[in-house]
Length: 157
Picture 1: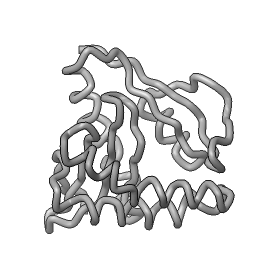
Picture 2: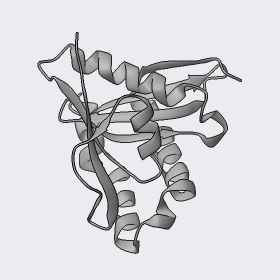
Picture 3: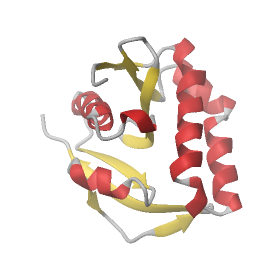
Picture 4: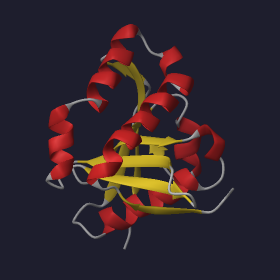
């Protein structure tokens, strides 16, 4: 069950990718967030403006696909270098999917004038981000009901 590919998301991937994000968020993250935080997350992944930004290639999506073509992971960047979403199906966690999506994002960022990649990590995601080289840039905080720890990783060509 460890064969998968990473590719840029296409228009017909959007709904399945956001459904995966929602499902994994609900299972692993939502319990630590207030109702405001959960509502803000749901509002973000269902925002039509975000979808329009994706359609004009200003919001970037990557998907991980199993051998059967199922989306088993997804990640997205805004502002050219900020990870706004990264979720992996729970059956595929700890199998290199998230790490591979991060590498694809790093490759993309390294082709720009950006020198780092940033993320506001949820408590659940902190150990993963540390394991792939991110460092905390500030203390944990609550923003819009969401518990986040700002992090970054330097990108070198």
